[in-house]
Length: 616
Picture 1 (tube, rainbow, N blue to C red):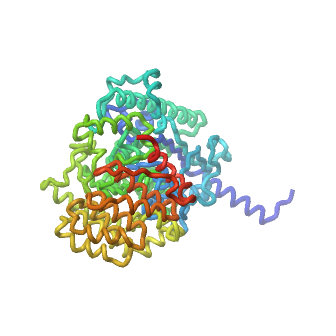
Picture 2: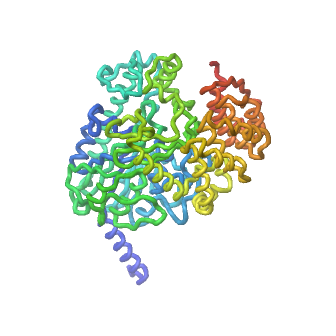
Picture 3: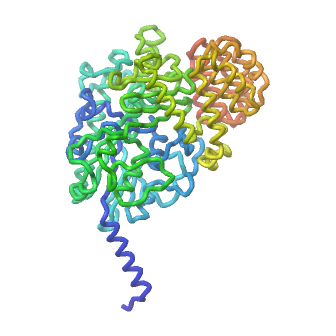
């Protein structure tokens, strides 16, 4: 058969691409859902034994300081797949009310691997808050496997294990009594912020059983690679997709929500591109923004400028450089129907936590959270007055900023922000975080209900175009860190500003200062009564209600009846539940017919109504 010159050239070119692609390592990501490093004995003496993961570490690297930038699924996984900080690109809310485009020409990182000849598969969880775009996966399904690739084709395979997911602890009282655990509950190690009860001990023991089950599943996948003769050409990453899953972990920005286990098995045939011996411990800090850039670097590909992360393995990366890294940024925003806004800056052994709305106490109702018996019991014990101070913190107003020495206080229960000995450290980390949220810039300084409209058509461009305004909002918010007598004049000026979001943050700052802000109550009354922005009225009523200066219920009811936005209504309902369940505690006889029909049908509004309309 005669072959045309063009076909011949194309065949030769195809072979060249194939050869180049085959001269690259394979990658497998094995991801356990909802578990921090605290549940594996490999990382914590009180954790469960995980022999299969331990063998991966013996043949590779154990990372002592690996962090999910977010403590919840969709935000964490979007950070992983994009290499971008979520508050910069508009993917920080779990779960999305609107899927956003990626910045510029950026694609999700597997697309670059696929473009370079890799076979990319995902089994099967995605949970992205950004538009996926074309060409990311060859297959994403419950059957996806590397075995479907062309002969000799390098591959990236990602697999998630739901065995350890939070839902595994949604058992009933009857199930707890009937189903014994392999782990002895009497030997369970409880965090100092948890009450020592049979329910908590059983919950910890049951979760350790799930960790061991997950470890066996990890071992099965590694055995498949070995059977296929691929293990020594494949980097195997094992890690948790964020923290969890006992109360005060998943969804919360403590170490139990952010600090994940990470082990990377380095294959024999590719040890020459990793600057570390097998069995080494890496002490430097790595975060989810770094994972995509790391795979691209290991594959010999360039890293897009739009990504925020830096590679921690591969050519051009030294172990000494990685071990010198000691900073990590964390973020927590809306989790389902529950709103929050917290940022953290980890620097060495110190962690700075900035709660931009500290009156939104941690235990504020989230329906999914309280399906767990341990959560429900914990709240009952608090209301019964049966908890000590460390166990009660979860149900109390937070400080606007906190500082923890994690070497001395790994569970983050002793706030050092008021200790003069740590004043310099506090000031340094406060400044570092403020600079970072301004430089991103952080889009969460606008309400989500505002962002999901025009700004989320191109969130990154919107943020860049509003850098100066966001910086001003950060500065207004940070007036909550200044003694009120010194900050009063600037807060009052913010309340009189013509732009609504300056007034909005001025009122949040008043609420953060609490009763000290009472001299500004008259301005807040005026804003609650007549501000043209509904959310400003609600924040004004919230402030007045929190300090007991005015009944917030009429303003909230009118705003809920007026709004045409489900997202806006959900934010208002967050304030309502705060004022009802927290101090001073207002009775709110809510009725579903308060809302416009389209608003009442919004899923998160329905979740709030389910809780509010339930018998107390």
